[in-house]
Length: 356
Image (spheres, rainbow, N blue to C red):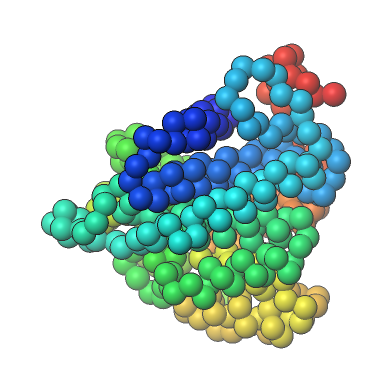
């Protein structure tokens, strides 16, 4: 990830050093805005992996690198890193506002793709660090630092943008119109090792995970042939089996999706009755009955949705970490501590870094 950050920093340097070569209208703003958003995104995930539970802490775990060089960077307090993440995202938002073409079309055939109008460099914005991906990351970052006012503001901007829609029952395992940000993997089906890792051998494990005994069987997120394949050898997730997807969604790994913005809104509401409105909008599109939330059960209901919605996408771990869960469904430990939630430094980081 730091190698990617180095490349992004190199790009950012030349964006300004050679700005005169970016003669196409809005290219400078779009390229620089994307790069700043990516730098923030990469550092944020590094911090979520290696950092402490409390993002307002002065604990030093990673360095925020803004220069393309080989110098050893001083590891900074977590709250300083979070300030840098938010600052880069805010700068990206300014650059992309009014310049991002916001092309989120999903052609289903190659002929449709070939006939798409406009600059091909600016198509498929769901696979680039677009304006609404930046806003979504701001919502996520502000939630992590406990600023629910700003988190709610940005999550609501994404929801109300009209560029994305919650999808109900569908043959599309990726729920394409819900994708805010994703990456494209070339030769995905040839090189993909993910699909086999999401095969569940135990039916009881699966039933618990997706709350099958409590109307979960009707949840479209477990629909046979679309969400999962069911066989005597186990239950396999379909998100990473992409042989027959549309040309615009093949090779896609989703990193930020629309439903998370609804969950952020739910978590930021002052009243449980207001929070359940946001949860139930997603539940309704997943063919589930509404839930009634109280101060006592709200977080549990949000956790259940994270568990089902983001299976195989890597977001549930960070939910548990952010809330400091001591244990959770299928937890391998009886009592999780902060050290269990923090990835260990690589050996070279200790040998050559400034980890004191």
